[in-house]
Image (cartoon, rainbow, N blue to C red):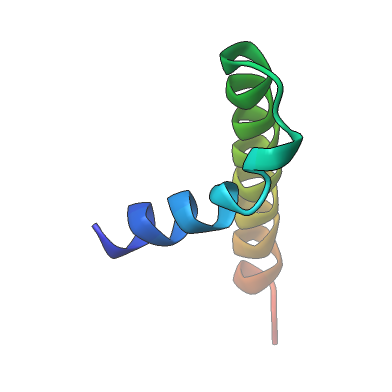
Length: 50
């Protein structure tokens, strides 16, 4: 629950840049993809750390 609130708070700071619902949905999807990609990459790096 705390993660969802933090995520909404972060996205809220960009609300003024969004013209419509479709743009918000796309922007959110792009950010979620970036976060998911880095999370997976960090897991791979951590697995092979000495």
